[in-house]
Length: 269
Ligand SMILES: NC(=O)c1ccc[n+]([C@@H]2O[C@H](COP(=O)([O-])OP(=O)(O)OC[C@H]3O[C@@H](n4cnc5c(N)ncnc54)[C@H](OP(=O)(O)O)[C@@H]3O)[C@@H](O)[C@H]2O)c1
Image 1: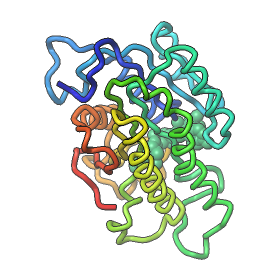
Image 2: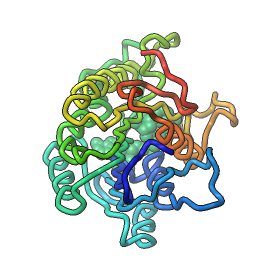
Image 3: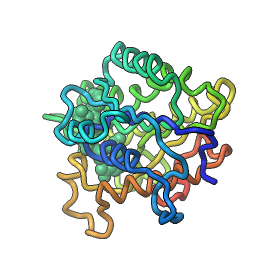
Image 4: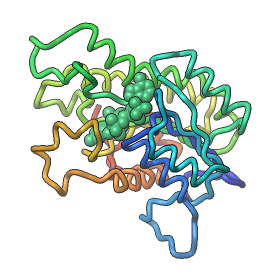
């Protein structure tokens, strides 16, 4: 049996689902139809999925719109700029009013570059406002979400709250340097969510809170930095979504608070 013990279909929320890994996860979840041909490693969760909530920042992408047209009964899309706390509160209130419970939430929001914000190669490039934006999007958004979403996990069935982190956020693994803001904001994400795991263990003990490194994945985020990545180390979005769902499916209650790589191994802090 997989991680979820719900007697009926489970409900999922993917935050940052407009493109990239988040969109890939929504696609996989909508096609998660356990059947006789499935085998361990197929990347399907061993339970049926009810409603999938997917958030976008400003304008829903053509890909997300197309999914909505294909699955009007199961997919709900919600605007949520993670830097606007009122939008987080309103989005969660919408889910509360509709389904009232969540079993799987994945925080896929993240920035590495955006307009003239580019990862720093040296101290000369450090800018306070850029650092703050990295923290606001990559770290603070997740913990605000954790605050508002808690009531939706308190239903007594097993649930998972995963945040997509990054191996470069590992302090122990940092040998190359550079990318100050991105690295530090992912390290902060890890600490914030580890702390959430401890509070949730008291307030929502059936929620497993984890951080996941997806591996280098072919998305807009990694696109400018793919030159030195060998083809076998650059995953498609579909492959990453499958691998992350496999890690989620294999989670145990005692895994809460841990930082996992795409292959299920634990990463150093
Ligand atoms: N790709 C990789 O190689 C790689 C490696 C390690 C970790 N990661 C992590 O994986 C996660 C997903 O990244 P990705 O590769 O899929 O990148 P992506 O294709 O660039 O997607 C980034 C997502 O973040 C959302 N986003 C950015 N700023 C936002 C904001 N202020 N409010 C709400 N949403 C916002 C975007 O929404 P809109 O489209 O609506 O703007 C988009 O859905 C990130 O946390 C990233 O750090 C990626």
